[in-house]
Image 1: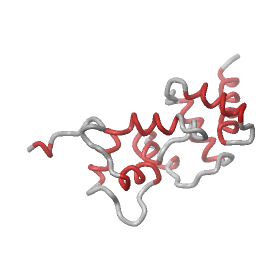
Image 2 (image 1 turned 90 degrees about the horizontal axis):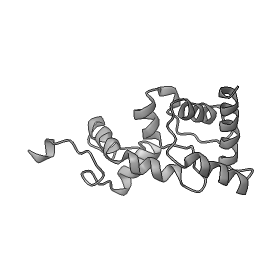
Image 3 (image 1 turned 90 degrees about the vertical axis):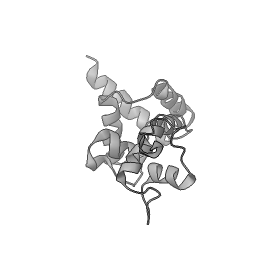
Length: 139
């Protein structure tokens, strides 16, 4: 009966490489999971680590894997496997993260630092948007 017990942590539900990639980039031809319930269970058990890794990758502050948008945002329009730092979709995603206070501690500071070291990179584009959003809130 142990297999029916919810798996709440990464220790309970370790991911293989195919599963990790599916949570990051979406399903390709066949799923690495038995069904949507197992996919959700894998996400719930591993999301803290996956988000932390994304938030602090050299060029990815503010970026999230596809499973995040699918399960956390609840807005199908945010689920898109394309990536372009200057796209309206990416701005929409960053705006959603900001509006819902979904940045992990230290992520915005990392984004700011990266924007200074690579003024043409994704972090710089994202940081400019965050500054614009902060200016809208601050009188």
